[in-house]
Image (tube, each protein chain N blue to C red):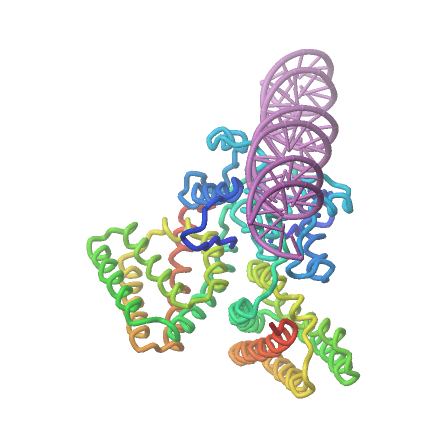
Length: 227
Length: 227
DNA sequence: TGAATGAATTATGCATTCATTATTCCTGTA
DNA sequence: TACAGGAATAATGAATGCATAATTCATTCA
C-alpha cells in the first residue's frame, strides 16, 4: 500500500518514515533481522541516522502488516511464523493466486505471456543445475508477472503485503527432488493454461500449486523448529 | 490486524496509538469524517486529549490500511473510494468470501448454523418492513458468523481490513426492490448450502453474491458522484 | 479588475525531552 | 548457595519544541 506511482517527471520526495518502512521490511525479509528477534530501536536509529519518531512510525506500520509484533512497553520483535499461521495464510494466498490467474487471463498480452515463457526457461535451467535460490527468484518473478497482468492494483498490494509475511519461509524452504520436479511440472501446466487464456484452469492449477508449496514449507519449518 | 485476543484475566493496557487507530477508524467508517475530507490533526488531538505523536502513528497505520491517504507535507485525507477501486476490491472480497464459505463448511457447528438461521429470520423481517439499515447490519452479522466459523484468524483479519475499506459504501448503498429481493434469495441459498455443509456450493454462491453486491454499490456510487 | 509576487500564518516532519515501565544487577537473608 | 527484594539502568510511550514546507492573505502592477 501507499504505493507512490507518480509520473516520472514529478519530483520524488518521500518522507523518512515511508523510506524507513521499506528499509526495515527489506531488513526483515532478507533475514538480517531473524524471526523472533528483538527489533533494536536505538541501534537502528543510529544505523539509519534518524530519530526515534519516524522509526517508531515505521514500526507501527510494519506491525499493522503483521511483519513485526508490538507488545506494549516491551518493544517490537520480528513476528515468528508459526505452523498455525502458515496453515492459515496459505489458503488465503491460494485464493488470491487463483483469482489473479483468472483475471490475468482476461488481460494478459502475447508479449507478457512470451516474457513469462522466457522466465520459465531460465527457471528450468536453474532447476536442472540444482540452484535453489535463483530458482526461487525466477519462480517469484513469474508469479509477479501474472499478478501484474491482472491490472488490479488493489489485488497486487494485498497479495504483496500477504506475501511479505511469509516471504522468508518461501525463500529458504528446502525441497525434495520429487517435490521440486512436481513444482516444475505444475509450472508447465501454468504456462499451458496461460497460452490458452484458460482462466478457470489456471485458477485451479495455481490454487493446487500453492497448496503443495504449503506442505513443502511446512515440512521445512517443522524441521527447523522441531520442538 | 494487531488483534489483541488476550486471555480474560490479563490486565488490559493498550497503548494510545492503538486505541486511537480504532477510534479514528470508527470515526471514518461511521462517516463522521467523510471521504475526501482532510483529517484535522490538531483538532483530533484536542478532541482526544493526546499529543500529535500517537495520533500521527495511528494515521500511519490507517494509511497502510488504505483508509486514509498521506501526501508528504500535505497531511492526511480520508481515502475517497473510486469506482475503479471498488471494481478492484470486490473481486478480492469475493475470492475471500468464497474461501471463507469453503472453510467454514468444514468446521461450523450445528449450533452456529442455527444461530445464522436466527439472524437470517430477523434479517428477512427487516427486508419485509423495508428497513435498509437494520437489514445491512444483520447481513453483515451473517457474513461475520461465516467468517468466524472458518477458525482462521489470518483470513478473518485480512477480510476485515479489506472490508473496512469499503464498509461505508456497503452500508449506505441503496437497493432497488428487485435487487434486494434477489439478495434475500441468495441468502436463502447460502443457508441451504450451509445446512448441507456443501463448501463448493457455498463458495460459488458467496462469490456471485458479492459480484451482485458490486453492481449495486457501483450504481449507487455513480449516482452519488455523477460528474 | 485580475493575475502575480511576497509576507504572514499555519501545518507538517522530525528531533528532543520527559515520565513511566521493564529489566538488570546487586545486596542481604534464609 | 539460592532466592527475594530493591536500587540502578535501560527501554518505551508520549509530549513538547523546532525547522521546513505549504497555504493563505495582502499587496502590487498590468
